[in-house]
Image (cartoon, rainbow, N blue to C red; front, side, top):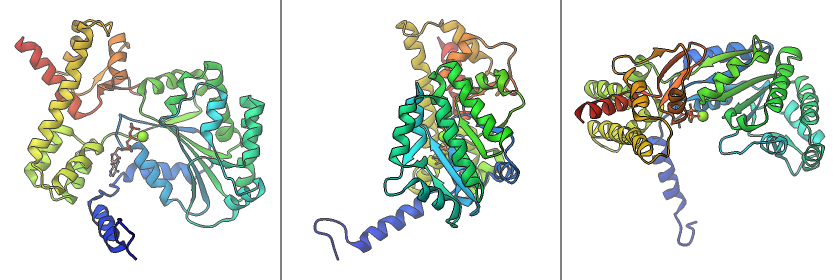
Length: 369
Ligand SMILES: Nc1ncnc2c1ncn2[C@@H]1O[C@H](COP(=O)(O)OP(=O)(O)OP(=O)(O)O)[C@@H](O)[C@H]1O
Ligand SMILES: [Mg+2]
């Protein structure tokens, strides 16, 4: 029956179907999926850090994979985005999710026995009483002890996968507490083989800090998720009927950054002019980068224009460079999400092809002055 003042059911269905038709579907990532599946098919031994430039598709990849896992897996996919974690209480609040109707026994039974395609949770399900207790205890050791027991119980029937997306939000936690957390991950993986642990981040300075951390040496692996390569990007654009000239133009402007490819695929479906769209994107990014120099003039940023330009000049001809030493200006540009560093290779590159072209535009503006 039609709802008063609202949409009729068939109208809703039509809108939903139209939306579905316009939604881009998950594309490729075969190599990365294979690599992660190989990890999941063996006993947990190392913490896996998934890192890569912003908007390269890390979250999409792991969410997609979580959907595909068979029934002997249970996934706790905790996305810390937007959460503020500075101490133990924040961490507990972010990690767990209250299941109001169930007892602790019911929760464990459900996770262990229900046989649907991999069970997925956006937080580790516990009862309100348990959460209150964990809050009261106020030490990381208590929560770790509880979790060890939790994963041990589930482990009799299922393989647990703990995903912590946007892990960099914990970077403000005190160093000794951060190390306790990593120590716990090591215990879950290398020592007890209880749970696969994936830590995801696009904050390359945070990855750099982890990479330097002596305690983690030999106890974790690094999996790089970059923007699509040329073939993958072309195959994506092909699906949305881009002509050859358009495909090349898109690659020229935005490279294989999935978020832009999706945006342009939507523009294409809406009949927009692709050349205009990519040029618009570049103009916006160039202006965003130029605004840094306004901040320098207004003394909101302590670095000199010349020192920033010097960093940009390195990309006049190169797309990626090797670094000997980090400097303050590079760190600033990484913080501003203009550059991306890969500590495992000691390389720096712009966050995307669009950033590279925007940097080159800024250099052109300088030369015209
Ligand atoms: N394999 C893919 N197939 C189709 N679309 C994708 C794919 N990967 C990413 N996308 C698109 O790109 C957008 C950005 O991806 P996602 O949020 O996963 O990136 P991310 O690397 O996690 O970003 P962040 O650095 O902000 O954490 C998604 O919303 C989705 O629209
Ligand atoms: Mg993400």
